[in-house]
Length: 200
Image (cartoon, rainbow, N blue to C red):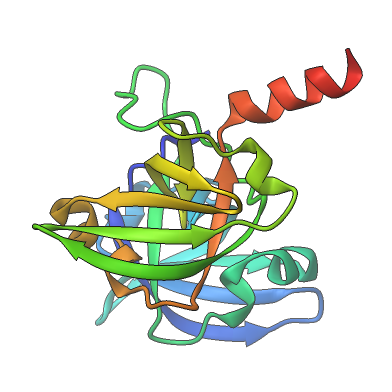
């Protein structure tokens, strides 16, 4: 489980095709000595398992392997060396819940419609795919590229977000452009409520 509070912008330093999957090496400012092999880390909202780690002249790094299914359903398939990645380590019992409960399972790909400066903040409009848009509500929570955010408003399949300066600078959201795809995870409560209504 995660909270959607990004604590590092990592960087893809190597992409390699393997016999089974695709392997990414990620540079990070974290101290990799206390990252266990097998640990779960959120990468732009996608939970992946650490399979190797190391330290060299460029700093600390770890490696993850990504299946074809994940590559086809998330933005990870387009990653290349040099790309920035929102990173969050799995929450521990007793950690502060600064965002909301996030599973690290991407529900679908959204598309950035527009980005508008508003004072010191930025307003981002994102189009959600059908039927995912039905689970997004004004003042509800949503995870965009691994960042826990509050939905400002919803108009059909388009929802808007207000990104404060800290979040704009401390995550990759400040690097987005109109037309870019983003990983979306809907609020877990909305998912289970919808399922309950379908089976009631």
